[in-house]
Structure formats: structure tokens, C-alpha cells
Image (cartoon, rainbow over all chains, first blue to last red; front, side, top):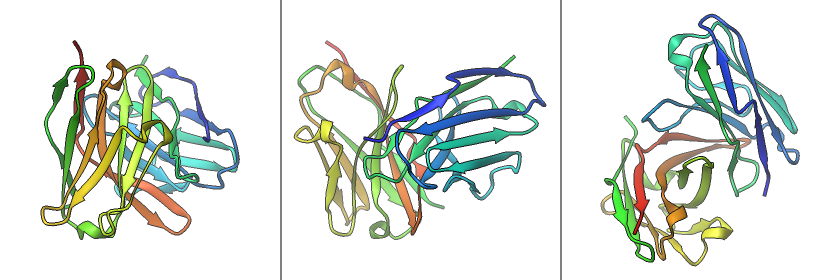
Length: 107
Length: 121
């Protein structure tokens, strides 16, 4: 199985901050990397697919980059509604695997 | 709009079975794979398996083979995930998801609202 390792596991930040979450795959996955956001009591929603493509309707303050094994999700100018849990997920191998999640909390 | 609506929460005893349904609307049922993922407390998201609603062919993660069955009913546009021999560690939120596959891009959208399966004695 391809292991996905996210860091940090939790992060405190303030409204207006810029934050970066990283995700590392245990083997190369090209750009088969997606990012999801999960708010309390809700199902996850896709933010970015194929490493850097913004899902329709997602604000442009979200961006993704990377290829191979190392990926980042960046949120510029955090908004109150961005405090949530973020997951990366590889879709290179059919045994789809997720990172353990990054909980973004208000400082 | 595209909707995946799941059945309600289930409380089960160890050793029992559970069947979770996922009713799909808003697009051609047979056009996209449907996957199941679970969110285990303090462990994260885990892929369970998938089915192609057109053929009925399914595939499971190795750890669930022999214990999980994924089926579909094309007459009601519903996908089912049945898990047998439930264990305490199967307590989780179970989600059905539609898989979008565009060549070199594959992602899940949307997700069902989730079904909580609680296993306790």
C-alpha cells in the first residue's frame, strides 16, 4: 500500500494567516493527489484534485502544488470558515489511501 | 444536483452484520464507480472498496475481503455495503462516494452524508 504522511497533524493559526500543509507519499504517485476539507458533522469535500486543480466553487485562496512524492496545500489569508480538518488522498493506486489528517484550529 | 443519500445510524453487537445503503440521484447511476470509505475515530479515513454500478463488479481492500460485500440495485439506483462479523473496531462513520475519473485525474465527489455504525456489547 502507498502510505500518505501529512504534517503537521494539528495547526493553530489566526484569521488572515497563510498556512501550508504537506503530504508525502511513500512512493511516487505523479500528480494523483487530492485534498479534502472536512468540517464538524459534515462529510469531506474535495478542494483540489490532481495536485493543483481547484475544484469548481472553491475559493482561490486555496492552492495545491507538488508531484512525485511531495505535495503541499496552501491557504492564503485564512477565513473563519477554513478551520476544519484537511486530508490528502492518493488516487494512483487502486488501494486508495489517505493522510491521517491535519486539524486546523483557531489560535 | 448530484446527491448520495445514505441510510441511518446503526447500532450492532459484535458478530452481527450491518447493511448500509446509498441512494444516488442527479446523474446516470451506471456512469461512475461508487466507493465506500470509513472514518475511524482517532485513526482517519480508510478505503473499504468500490463497485461499478453498470457491471456490478466490485473490489475490496484486502483487509475487508471475505467480510464485506458491495452490491447495487439498478432499479432503485442504490448501492449497498454489507459488513459481517462486526468487531468493536468497526465502529466508524461510513461514507459512500462517487469517483470522478478523467484520464490522469481521479477524485471523489460528492460524498454521502455518512452513516454511523456503532458496535458495542
